[in-house]
Image (cartoon, rainbow, N blue to C red):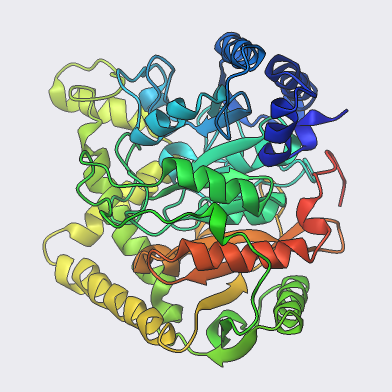
Length: 489
């Protein structure tokens, strides 16, 4: 029995019925990890011993006839920019190679109350800066559907682990699409909640006004339940929302009759992959068949989103990474004086993409350029948000592609950062506007690579997004297929 291929909700029922034990499940997933890690390389740090101890504790509870929480005893893993007390949190950077946090992130505390089995920390682009997980300082992660291809990024380790079966669920973070794009590339479900819905306390910052933690799972049901666990107000995060958290699981019903769905004409443009367009339009047609009211809408400032994002995000990154100087935080490389020490530390411990974004950010914030670049970007960000505000006066959700192409070959964009940045064209507007969005599979390319459908919702209306996603998912068989590890294009 391939337990690693099942979603958490099925495994939870099997545990309750004592058809399996948590130890049996954990060993099955660890065996899958042994089988796949040399090919996929989703993990940076593994915590096998504590995982088996947690599984044994769950089995003892079940033997006593006690009830267990939804994720209790079910193996999962955490992106390596989310702090875990006593377990290294490296951000896939040499700068934090040996950093062991003295505290848990708020989301990890919420998870701890569920008593899941934590298998380790997952690979990512360094400091979450990248869209392919090729920018990790330690190793690249590969796509389980085709190990010649990237898994997406920056939460590539999270998506690849769930797709490969070396984790049942995972946490990722999304600054400009870093959960949704790898979910699309790896054929899993990834959700970016509304900005503020989930605490950022303990998330190592990339761009503080854009970052958001979210779930990566096998299906929509698990995404709703995992979001339920991690969502909520946090006094340690001044940007977290005080709004009441609804019952996300209660939103999981097959019903889109009368749901008003907007299709933005700006998201279907010349140059997008023909197979992506065909799959997404097929999903839109399915929504119509299921009773939804589909209408074309306009988001006129979409064309400026990439430019705005790649001014605001690097500016915030440059400010956030300023503390990594060999004195306040991070590793240190010795030098003859303080200036040489800081120069050597940052030169040797930061990767090329991180240094590139720091330079861009400092340039945008520098005297004489602040008004021309950063301030103007903030003004256009407001216009992008107003586009969505206006659209949501007439529609309930917006449906669009997640990424303009399926996963591409490793190394294909390494020497062309601008081309890679353009992969975020459909995802960054949500971060700029602070909106919730989910990616789930909607088809495959001719080379059997997954294609993702993105459903976008109103602020704090994850419930409607989940309902639409669940209804579509239940109408499709491919939404629940596992990666065929090593399929070749």
